[in-house]
Length: 206
Image (cartoon, rainbow, N blue to C red; front, side):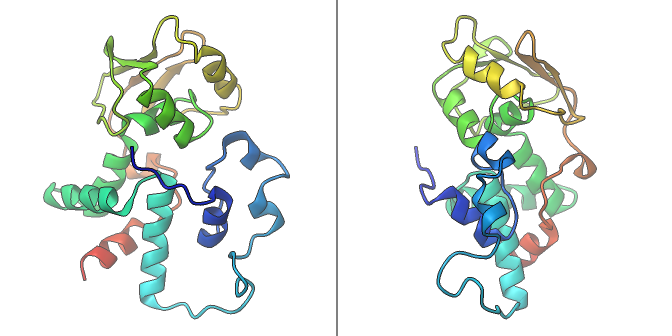
């Protein structure tokens, strides 16, 4: 399973925003971005010339790191989104949001997308009663996502639900029964990922 193993806090500092890659730690004063909000490296505090290409690249990197994908995976999703009818940028975000690992995170069953990916990969979640261990699995409207009965990960999942303030409007979560339902595919207004998807489209369209 290919993963980005670079330091998570440096990724947030490089993108200039919190990506919430470390779960609960990101909500405390221990968060590195709170203490050092400038980019990492010896020239981090210097002035950076903001070219059009740099702005586009940073948006793409921000989205890729938020959803915990490698470049090849992200590019593949963009090409899939471009083939669909409608707005390419919105299609891209909708595809990323409906990955099973992201849905588990959005339902509040994991403190971070990395934890959600690990839980899915280890077979702790069921989709419509069948075990699915593929983090990139695309959920559909009316799918039911549930923690497997007797899963040893239940204490960690319940701990994660305690950190969840709200659940996305396109999802329905039962934190007592540890089940969730996909009510519909998300609209752009229901996706709170802080990226300008139009810049990503401009970058890949060159």
